[in-house]
Image 1 (cartoon, rainbow, N blue to C red):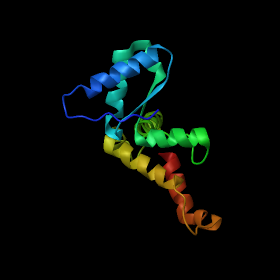
Image 2: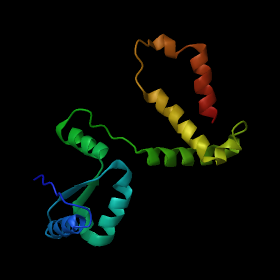
Image 3: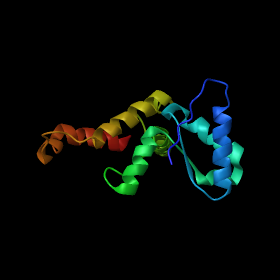
Image 4: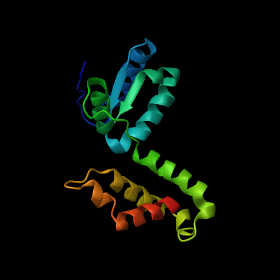
Length: 152
């Protein structure tokens, strides 16, 4: 059931919502707490802190996660996607493991900006390209780029 909770700031909307979600979660019911993208981590911490073990029955979703959940449940574009933070974490682990063989990027590898740039570059490889043929990806320039990235 979808329910809108409206009211001015400081009227107890959040407390009322958390009380209802906690009661539902403790009775074995499931709830979705829909929050803005930038608030999802803090909301998950709040739910976990307030609900304890019952927090497993509450899903804290941003609008992006909501879309992924709908597509996963009902088909469509429901692919498993890593969050930006998870991609940075994986890239950090990969760079740490390759640190001994890095020569050109050894100093840069310690910087957060390098991880961001490297993660963005890898993301570019995953984007679909329009009007690209297999031979265009197999050009000498592309092979050089792929070999260089493999060394990183």
